[in-house]
Image 1 (cartoon, rainbow, N blue to C red):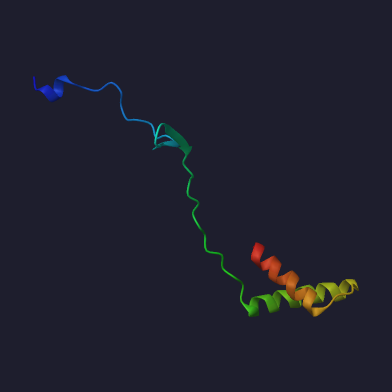
Image 2 (tube, rainbow, N blue to C red):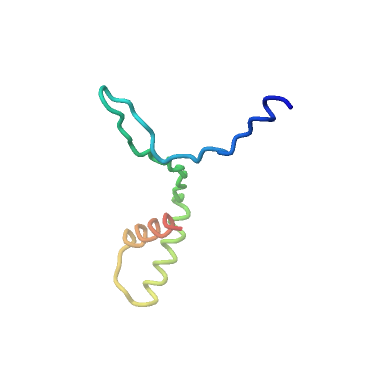
Length: 84
């Protein structure tokens, strides 16, 4: 039998740890490792998309007889498209 066959490890793989050791001058400090967040690129709606959505809000508002301004419709449309 070869030496490599005779020595089999019963431990298996080491589990990953959520902490790492930082050696200081006199003691070892343990700090938590921060997980990295994947940055997703947020796509801003175009002015044309906002304009069409604002027009929809305008028509809804007028049909209900509510008071509002075009600027209110624009901001509401921009916010609604950003959430989507």
